[in-house]
Amino acid sequence: MNAGLLLAHFNRISNAPGAVPRLRKFILDLAVRGKLVQQNANDEPASLLAGRASRLAFSLDSPPPFSIPTSWVWVRLGDICSKTGSGSTPRGGKSVYQASGVPFLRSQNVYNDGLRLDDVAYISQDTHERMSGTAVAPNDILLNITGGSIGRSCIVRNDLGEANVSQHVAIIRVAIADIHLYLHRLILSPYFQSFVISEQTGAGRGGLPKNRMDQLPVALPPLAEQHRIVARVDELMEVCDRLEAKQRDRIVSRDRLAAASYHHLNNGADAEVLRGHAQFFIKHLPTLTTCTNQLKQLRQSIQTLAVRGKLVPQMNDEETASNLIQRIQAERRDLIRRRVIKAKLLNASDCQGKSLVALPNTWQWLTLGQLLVFGPQNGISPSASSRPDAPKAITLTATTSGVFKPNYFKQIEANIPRDSEFWLRDGDLLFQRGNTREYVGMAAYFDGEDGQFLYPDLIIKVRVSKFVDLRFVHLCSTAPYARAYFGNHATGAQATMPKINHEILLNLPVPLPPIAEQHRIVAKVDDLMALCDQLEASLTIAQTEASRLLESVLHRTLEAQRYDMIEG
Image (cartoon, rainbow, N blue to C red; front, side):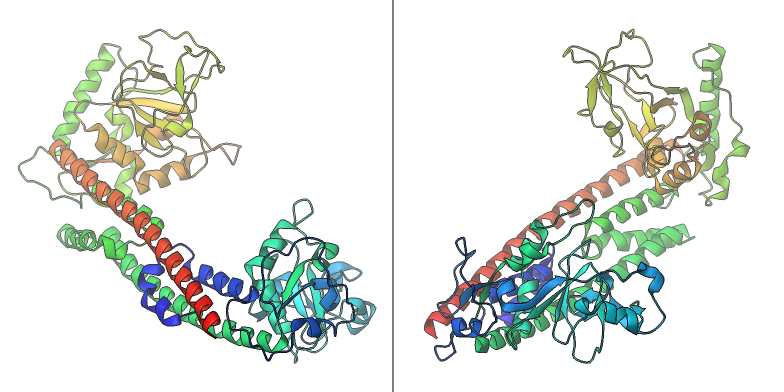
């Protein structure tokens, strides 16, 4: 394998999901198939090596899993081992653990790079002697055979001293001297690991039966070749370590730069300085953004800037929010007088938003309730229907993303008049009355044809004044501060389905700018979200191309390895 080729293409290859783990698996896969190092005709054949084991039943009942060099031999794992099997639980369980004594090794102590004894348990010498059948010896291979760490494996080092193992760890003790190092690499290979995963048994916690493990076919090379394989694997794993360190350093540097940018964007006080940080951040988005999690944070930062008045400049000649609110209140008073709505006028001085952040002078905090000309109103909960012509009612999933998705609906049995407000109308703003705490209160607006959809009881419908930009109100309703507001105020006995009521919804703080600025903010957010969409698409393309390049490099490496072996 050409380490230089991997390092030369690292910057592009590292964008592939799981690039370095994929390389590690590839190296081990080559190793156990006889494709990592050259064979040497002077090596003692593996058949003679295997004959030194105490058991000589090396025939396989089925065709071998893959082809191997002629100097190699297929054996069963149990045939080349003097011991295979799990440990045991000391009588009394955890109650017999001590602060010192004989180390009692559990699955949390077994890692591929060795034993980790930070939290090792101890048992007494007497308990250890009663469990002599599961005592470990130097060069034993330990393998986790249950739970989430199944497949992890290490070699017992010579200086460990006396130790024992739990029932969740298997001991694999070789019957042929000096083959434990190669066998450990084989256990870590995709071939053996896929066997471990496929052979899990037990309800709720996987397990690896001893009789199945003993029957696993093992491709055994000559001993001299095993030593060359182990040395080459270790050399290439060091290359992977360097690649991983380089990748980690690059990610840390980018994350620090992104975190500093997010901090300046979200915590600054001076609007002009913040706009400067925003311009810098937006200019360097492709450099700062390398994963979808960062894009999520970026979208949230854009929303936060927008609803704090820090995304676009204020204009001195525009109507202030105070004058805008007067027109909204006049509209609401007229609707109440004509009994179009029953909502009472809310007191702006009670708005909780005043304790959040300071707003530009032309803005004003108020509540969502002060903007409404309809609602809040819950939906309906009729039974499902199998009739293809039955009315359609949207499901919660239609609004969970914050964007209305008309494909998520179900047919219901209902006879609702066409003039009923249970039908969605263009401009309706919908809030999820109940969901997980992450999504409760999530909002989306409907901008389709009137009378297409009904909405369910777990959704609350409102309609905002014609004097405000619906999309700006929606932006505020889905901004991080609003998501935190709904999550903190949601109540209910069911932890999986907390709910908000009308009072909570009506008191949602809304920062209101002049109407012209609302339009500019929405347009700017659209532009930046489109940029985020482009970045997301670019990341996907980059990852796909990196994956293809990785596969190409691995293929070229494999072909070069085959050529070198033929030439040798």
